[in-house]
Length: 196
View (cartoon, rainbow, N blue to C red):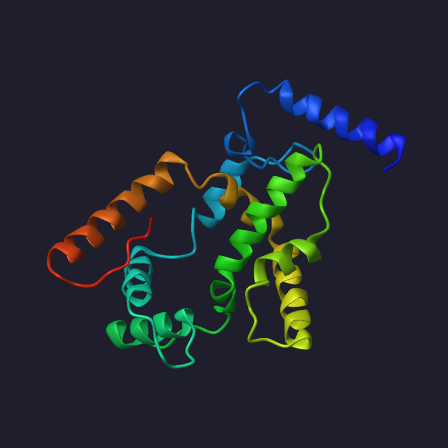
């Protein structure tokens, strides 16, 4: 590590220390230039692409692991189409990668803060997130890294705002309602995996 790197690291750690007891969990993404208004992003795209019914169905799906090779998103889409009587719209593939993209956003923001607000390299973050996919060979993982990188870069601010506003009161209000519905289902003896 060069002297310049040591000085930069010391300066960034000093900046974090000046924040007092604040951590990355207390900060919200306002863009790398500091000019982004997160409320505009949330007004345009909402807090989450998943509706309450999808969240409840995912809780049921997660409580019943499948021995088949269907992903949880495939199972969700099948359940939604059976319950609502309509097929999935074209162009909904972003929802398939939402969990990955949110994990990427959380790690990206953490590294962004830790390095004194320097934008981190995206590929290692993506590889860390998908590292548990042992059933994919290296070329499939490379393809997944490229796809996720493209999706993240296309909507980086939206995913970073979503990731850093996860504890927002309005978002938590909906989450509490879904949690109550899940608790009611559990009281009825329905096997449901709690979201928490």
